[in-house]
Every structure is written in C-alpha cells, then in structure tokens.
Length: 399
Image 1 (spheres, rainbow, N blue to C red):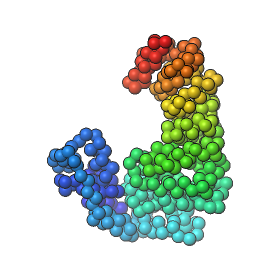
Image 2: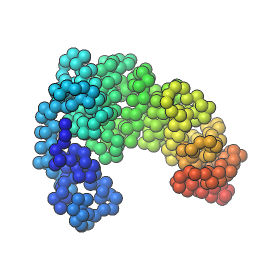
Image 3: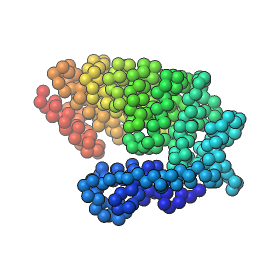
Image 4: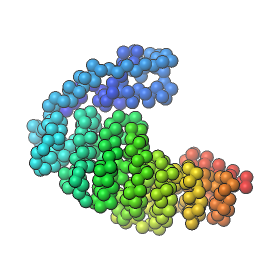
C-alpha cells in the first residue's frame, strides 16, 4: 500500500495527521511545522519564502477529508510474511476487531496488525489515522477483568504499544489513553500490572511511562500518581528478575516522579528507588539480554533527581538512611560509562543546598563527594554532567 504523494507531509514524509496551510500555499502536518517555527525559523520549509512575524496556520479541511475517505476505503494490505495478494484491507481488519466475531478471527487480525505495525511506517501511520489505537486499548481493558490477559488481549496490548507515537509532547493520538481515567479501567490496569505475565508487565510499564510524559494525558498522569495502588503495584517491579520488567518499571517510575514528585514521595517511592539502586549495583539483574542493573540504575537515579526537585522529596532523600552515600557512589563509577552520573550529581545539588540539609552535606563530604566530582570532571562524561559537577563542587567549596 502506497500513500499518495499529496497525502504526505513534506517535512516528515509521513501521512498527514493534522494538515495546515501557510500563507505560501504549502501544506504541512501541524506538529512538524510547529516544531520548525518553534526552532526559530521564519521561512516556508519548501519555498523558503519569508513568513513574517505572524505565521498563521490554516487548517486544510478539504485535504483532511480526502485523506479520511482514502483511509476508509478498502485498500488491500500486503502481508510481507505471505505470498497471498488478497490480504484483508485496513478497513476490514478494523471491522473484524470492532465486531462480535469469533476470538480466533480477532487473533488472526491482530497478528496481521502486529506484522504491519512492525514492518511498515506507512502501515502504522494509516492505522493511527483510522483509529486503531483506541480500539486496541478497548480490547485490552474491559470488564470483567481477568487476572491475566488472553492471547487476544496480549496481542492487542503489544499492537497498541507498537502504534503509540514516539513524540509524546505533540501527538494528538495519546488522547485515547484517557480511557484509563475511569475507576474500573484503572483497577484493571493495576491488576494486570500485579499479576500479568512478564511481557504484559513490561508493556504496561511502557504505557504508564507514556501516560506520565504525554501532554494529552496530564490529568490521567496525576490521577495515576495519586493512586496508592498504582505505586504499590509498580514499585516492587523495580527489582523484578527479568530486565524487561525492571528497566521498564524504572523508566515508568522516573516519568511518574517527574510528573508528580510529591505524590511519589507520599507513596514510598524514595526508599524503593534506593533499594533498586542497591540491588542493581549488586548485579542482581536476573535474566535478559542486556545490562539490567545499569539500565535500571540510570532510570532510578533519574527518578531520584525528579523527586529531589520537590521540597518533600529533598527532605525524604536526606532522611533516607544511606541515600546520600549511595548518590555519592554513583557520581563516578570506575569501569562504567557513568550514564547516571548527571542524575546523581543533580540530586545531590538539590538535596545538599540549604541550611536544613546540613547533615546531608556532612554525610556527602564524609563519603568523598569532592573526590568523586573531580574524577567525573576528568572522565569522558558529557558536557551537562560536567557542568553539574562544577556546580556541586562550588556548593561544597562555599561550606
């Protein structure tokens, strides 16, 4: 299936999701042209004509209507795994998933959706435009809630995750995640997070990370972060024996802490994060294909940095036994890429600043924070980590 040239944004080359026209007559996808303008450009990307001070974006409703009609028509979707030229269309797949047919038919349809989503950017874009994402989420989260997902629901979750747009700040497609705001659906999410299989737990953590970072789900993120049950089901996964789960849980925790740090503190995130750091440093990663401890530790340090950005978080970290020493140890680690150094340094700067944290500063000095910061400055770490290390040294120089 090929997308007509006029249906592609000239910046992203993907199918339009929200076409808007400039005064030059050129049409772009709204998120793409907004990023172009936000970067300070004041010319049309195609014609390079000046746009003036006010670059008006006029919705191109005619083009949008044409795209919607084209997407809804019965285009045949080639399956790269078969030689069959008569594969079902996207519209037919959607009708199958939305209907009340046999589960075996839906499983077959979901397998085709999964193949298309993994092998084709065009397929992903078209399915997003046709509204597959909310439909897939409805197949996962529905009453009555099972303790675990069936094959159909598991496939639907994986397909939904593959369709989630990577740009969480601008995509309009994240709005469908707000279906989780209902008490029943959120309870379903929590139960599956607690009792689902490994792939389900990892997938739901990815979903929670997206919810916490997407602009369209801010209210849902706050609702999830204020739920004791969400934290009670998420925090134990920081030390899960499978790296897919522990790393995904650590990233979800970091995103949730950034979205609502005070809620995270209230529900016990600080001690859980430092237990995760200790566990990861001891190399208790369990099974997987990568460095579980390192990846989980970096995300846990990012979560600590986010928590330390709130007054309640700073106090909680300062009071947590061994927390300051643990952060100092992660400022510079021999035989590592020091990916978490920037987060450790930033957290220490936040925790050790101010008269109320004098004990934390003394503990950091005793743990060798100055030596660690100097070693970091001499390493091959990034510019931001070095800038924060200098701020940390200035803080302790002024004591």
